[in-house]
Image (cartoon, rainbow, N blue to C red; front, side, top):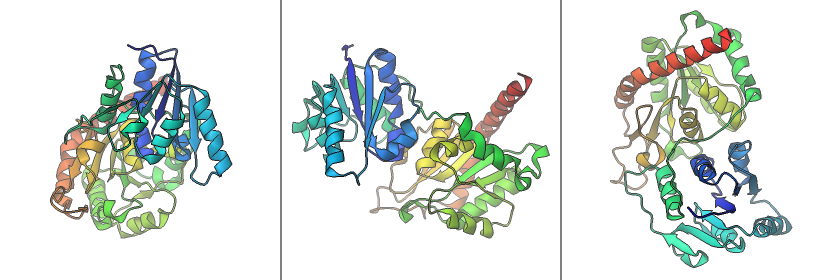
Length: 349
């Protein structure tokens, strides 16, 4: 194992990609407990990486930064003289940051920008590879031996306040004596092509309430509240709108449920990080790349994938989603029991 003293990891964006990069930080730290590990990303990454226990330094930029501010970012990166720079993103901007880093060894996957790096490696993943495993392949080329694919997204006691207030609200407390399963639905996405039809989510909500006795909560982000209000108004059963939250507060809320169903979006990765049961819906995004696809975390791919350009989620049928949820139900029950035991242990303490 090479003795790197200073390591820079680059994954500029998006939120999901940054969350999926967190195992790399932890696995490098496991093998280099005394190294200085920095992570470079867009400012949005602060929502994910602030408080990460395996990271020494978070360097972030914003596209609205002035020329002078960008020079300061460059100088900060350059001042460390990193032993190893790992560009997980490999796009023109990440390549530029790699170039000015003065890294002794600069690595990334192969592309037309290979001249910016000391070493590039062909993408080793095939059509059945989870993106975390793809990132791990790059680490192995650098001499590391990554093993644990778990996502890291730490949140703290203060981030539970919106969840606790929500659970204590009069409307939500109705029917809690039966200790129902708690389910998150996440029907939104900024890109329409990545949305499953809202009326199908409403029918799933009806079945979850009527047949599982579940409490269903709809989560949303900035600019998406009206869409959730529409979903609730369409439902023939009582469902609930999540409170406004920060990203870490949303993670705490999701972790307080047992099942997540949603489009491939940021909250879907939070569900994986929280390790509650999840079912992701994918159209043109490759399901096997974005979901770990194990007993607790499953996905459905549009049947049009690979057959038409930019397939939507329309071809994923309601009955298929319900069938997959029913198949996942034993794991959901096991998650419920685990959370109940953990809650009882806290009360006894």
